[in-house]
Image (tube, rainbow over all chains, first blue to last red; front, side, top):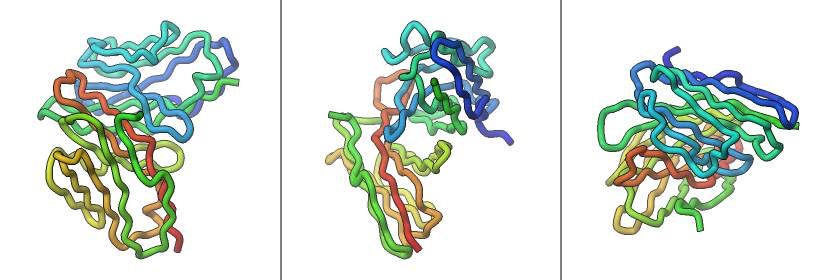
Length: 115
Length: 111
């Protein structure tokens, strides 16, 4: 399977715990995005990587959130001291270098439930 | 006001009906995307367009740049078309090409 993969698919955690999600983009894609989607809403942008450089972070990404893409391949999103409001679907997408506008390919998402 | 507005929010159709979902946006864009999301979360890109019209199977997407409006049409709808359809835009001058999403249209096609 050469699509975008995300792990884990589901995560249940207690409030105050730290969680880490992983995204493996399509191998030749240098652009990687994280989005968050709450129930009944469209996804919202969190952060963007071009290769290993994190070039943009949303105001939604509080200081409890950190994302990395250490070698320009897979990426991790960590949430520290989780809160109930962090419960959401976390989506990763990647896109190729070519063209002015880029089609984005989405992973299946990681559903986080904070109890 | 959301930058990307979709209508209707919910749509129920009988199998075989012609379906239209509308999307409007507020400022100039580099591209408009139509995406499909099934229960469980996975998002699939259906179309990316910046002008005119695109067709894939029973799906047709159109965009009117002057009116800042796009439509997604489904011909001969089928229960397997039941999903959330989401419109998203990306903007010129945005180095990231991040997507700004609408809230989606929940489509249920009944047999």
